[in-house]
Image (tube, rainbow over all chains, first blue to last red; front, side, top):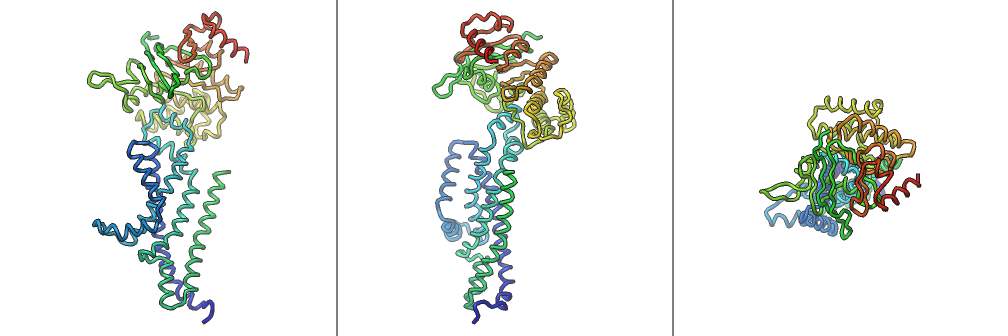
Amino acid sequence: MPLWDWGYAFEVLPQLLKALLVTLEITLLGSVVALLLGLLIAVLRQARIPVLDQVLWAFVEFIRSTPLLVQVFFLYFALPRFGITLSALTVGVIGLGVHYATYTSEVYRAGIEAVPRGQWEAATALSLPRSRTWTGVILPQAIPRVLPALGNYVISMFKEVPLLLAISVVEVVSKAQEIGSQTFRFTEPFTIAGLLFLVLSYPASMLVRRLERRRVA
Amino acid sequence: MSPESMIVFDGVEKRFGDHVVLRDLDFTVAAGEHVCLIGPSGSGKTTILRLLMTLEKVDAGTIRVGGQCLSHMERKGALVPADEKHCREVRRRIGMVFQQFNLFPNMTVRGNLIEAPTRVLGLSADEANARAVELLELVGLAEKIDAHPTQLSGGQQQRVAIARALAMRPDVLLLDEVTSALDPELVAGVLNLLRDLGSSTDITFLCVTHEMGFARDFSDRVLMFDAGQVIEDAPPSKLFTEPDHQRTKDFLHAVIDRT
């Protein structure tokens, strides 16, 4: 058996590409959850509402201090005991999305705090409603600053999707493993799976770096 | 000029922690009057403007603006601290110009000027735009309407900020050291604009300033502040030439020698 069999590699490639779509789908939906929920947490925490603020703080710290794998297992295996049964794909999206939301909320917070206090005061002096102050003044200044950091978290999330093989989501790596265990040839599928991540992650991080440089310039 | 009181401070106290910034402060500004607040840094002048803008809350006493209580509201016959809605209502009559301009950098000059009139006063885009054009002509920056604030000099930014405050048609304009952050050669343009506004409108002005020349020829009355209290309240002709208090004399000596 050769070390690398091109014929075999091309034979498994279509299956892996198909599984990659699942990975991308989870990344995309998980990002939507992470970016929106993170923003919501950051905005709510900025209002410093008693009790709610402590609850959100505890939630963020709890999620950040426990492994994603445990959270995913909990959602997938424990929730059904409470009468909530979610598909593996949904658990993947929610698990990754909520986990990363706690990180993005900190990123947003930093961006919001970087907006000078004078901007809030000018908005108050003009009697702008609170909601408009957020959407028209604060967030348009805060979010562009933190886009690179948010982009990096999306890339990290993309690379963490394979963790979901633990709950049998058929994404690229679990597909590679499945193919390998049927044929006992792991080199090609795993190499291809790794390369697929590289091919997507690298240009994405280049893009983020360009965003960063534009912010500095 | 109407003799009614536009701004009334009655026994106002403001503390930051243990530090008492304003102590049992009483003063009145009549409608249309131009009043300048002078005094050493940290004497509480800016705090007065911030209280009026509801950027700070009073710890004791009451503040009335145009007959309405700003700091408190009536509920079941009793005075309770004002809520956000009440503040918003009374505050709408007040405009403020800041030392650091605080224009919104994510909007053009036009955007800065039409934002509050459309969102708060409910003007149509066309009406707000017409008002913006008119005000930019007044402040001499008509050609900058589509510029971004960062493309303007400090003096230009401050003139846009004045126009932005005027777009809300305020009864009261608060000026917080509006020329302190400007390069010296840009100060005169802004002060002249304010002098023009002072003589062509019936807006009530309350200014914190270190520009004694401006305080002298712009105000009807000058309040000398020290340690959170008004220690002297006189027309500029008197306060700048024959002040009653030694503290005022010392202060004027110090600032006038400096320039």
